[in-house]
Amino acid sequence: MFGNRTNGASPFRPAPKDQSARVWRIWTCVCLLSVALPGTRLPARADIVSDKSDHFIPHHLKTAKRTDWIHVILQIDSSASESKHQQHKDFTAEEQQVRNLGGEIIQRLPLIDALAVRIPAQQMTALASLPFVMHMSEDVPVHKHDDFTRTHTGADVALQQYGLDGTGITVAVLDSGIYPHQDLTNPTTGASRILANVDCVPNTANAIDQCGHGTHVAGIIGGNGSASTGSQFSHTYKGIAPNVNLINVRVLDQNGSGAVSNIIAGVQWCLANQAAYNIRVMSMSVGHPVGESFSQDPLDQAVEQAWKAGIVVVCASGNNGRLSGSNNPNTGNEGWGIAYGSVEVPGNDPYVITVGAMKNYDGIRVDDRVATYSSRGPSLVDHTLKPDIMAPGNLVISLLCPGGTLEGEMPSNIVPPSQYMTNPASGTQSQYFILSGTSMATPVVSGAVALMLQANPNLTPDTVKGRLMMTSDKWNFPDGTTDSCTFGTGFLNIPAALSCTAMATQPALSPQLVQTSSGAVVISGTNTACGTNAIWGTNALWGLNAIWGTNAIWGTNTLSASNSIYADSSAWSDDAVAADDSIFEESILGAGE
Image (cartoon, rainbow, N blue to C red):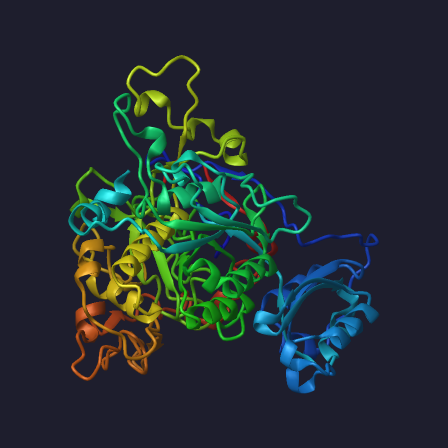
């Protein structure tokens, strides 16, 4: 999540209607395990800690006591490693040196040549001084980003006109787990379409969802409506690819939070088992604040490995698109103001498909609007133009996880059986739940990708991404103005993506924004998916103006202004992204969208 936690709303908590938000705190930082002596503080850190670390560690150390534990992902320089078996990525010798400093090994992450460790704060300088430590990133908490999805994207047309339902394609859902819901079975055989259950949350017994978030996400991707189909039902709730196979990779706990190392462990499992289960898509409705360049961030490195291995990675942009915690009719974004630079990791990575959320305004698709909470680009540090595409994400009806944390916290979000059944018997238990957020928009796109891959299994991730962006419906604000850092390339159009024949000839990287000498913010056309040379061969099936609109995204009074993300003093001030309250606490939207 980005920005000040008291200012940004997190829309995975559904919003029945537009109204002032009520904010709850639902969790505290799981990685700040303090056993400190009262009043003891760390001495000034040596420069080597800052030189080798992300932005989070130095800020954490400012307030850390000597005996506080810091959770860190160590990226290992193999050339300086003492290991004799580097081809197997065996870092036994390095692990022992960490233990010699009083540290503990939490996860081994060979996918990115890294170790997840926890170590006393007073040992951070000594840790950074070890010759094999190339870079350190705090193992920060990662959190969830919480029936118009089919009709407003064309998924119903994909089934009726093309006969596509995701058959034969497998989507890995990295989330809070998946409850074995009736809608995730094969209606003919009764067999579960969840092919494997993987638990990457430490100290837990199984991969079954205890939160409800992951089950809801899985239903948006592949729910087949079995629990709402028949003569006694008035509405049937289906996902985008209702016969797709799923892999349940639990990386978040019952409160929808976890550590970066959990997610990386989940990505590692998917890569190791990619061929066995035909894993073609990873859906990731999770994120954490940007603390460094995507080129150094451990989670970004992991998802790039998956992308380059042929897995399409679909990520939520985040839920901090509101600049203010209160509504002021004189500001933009329906009175909430626009929080640019609020896209989260791994959605900041230029390889992945990053998804923002749209909301249904009056039932007519052309009137759909951006959800005010949907995070806006460009990304911090790298200024990558995000999101890539928009999809329905507000007030989405999907699967209920019985006994999950969300059901207990939000009973009003349970869909009453009378809403989809004719004369339900007394005591009938609901099967469905309502949630809002970029978490819900992400699986819409994941399902769309499954349909594209069913139609043509030979598509590469880069071609999939390019076709989705190329064929999306370009979108504006109600007053006719547009903003690429709000809408990306536009609103998902599944039938158009299915009919597209363009092929990628180089990586479909989301472009970078640069600031000109005159102060204008423009798209860099160098080696990007959407630059002037395009990626679709020498004939350039689209040029800069066709996909992104105009060359200059903003004038000198917007992103390039002194109080914007392009100002050195704004991105990492103590009371902004790097403040303790903004990194380690979660604000949840209780009302409004």
